[in-house]
Image 1 (cartoon, rainbow, N blue to C red):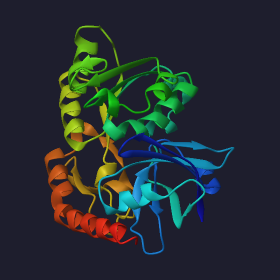
Image 2 (image 1 turned 135 degrees about the horizontal axis):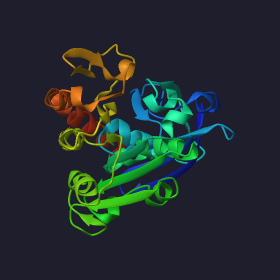
Image 3 (image 1 turned 30 degrees about the vertical axis):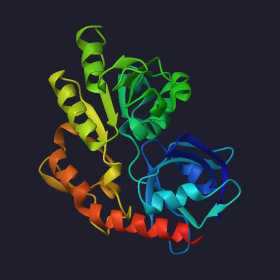
Length: 287
């Protein structure tokens, strides 16, 4: 059993939990994910690792309440335990394999959208701890939906907040901020990484390509069972069928067929709505 050490609601629908999982924490690297099964009969939910502490033996997960299974995870409290937590899974970020001397010559810009800010954090932290220059753009609809602001400020060189309504930071999209930094402010980056909603990653990639900036994206939102068995995370990358959970979740953004990926994301909408309604009925009856 995997005990929940701390639980915190970052927004009304986004929950951060620190879970005791020593063996997983000892092996985790940035870019990887884990699978949570809350109960014996619960669904397997892949979640990107949002932080890990090898000494304390804990991993941090951030869950956005969308459907029945994410609601079930968030319903757990401190001191309770998940039935299973499996990982680390997936291929770590490419930079974890780069020689330190070469890595320190790079200048990274991360573009994070919404809850995608959580998996950006361990990557930025890992690079910062090794003396690599990192800037971060975080986008959200309003200031109340910005997460990890203080944590990110502690591990990056410059943090740029963007909100759709202008309630915090730059009023506009993360893509506009990226273009401004490069074309107006004279920022020279060697690598971009975009993590967030699929539509955001698509346009972040198009913007990066216009700026002749290499970009990596994470297709973690496509994953379902996390093992490649279900086939739900199939996506075309550089003209070939790839599986995000076993061959990713990170890929060269230039090579990803985002339109296909977004169509695949919509395949199970009806089932999600039905499952969520069933979950609400069970809660209403006191389970």
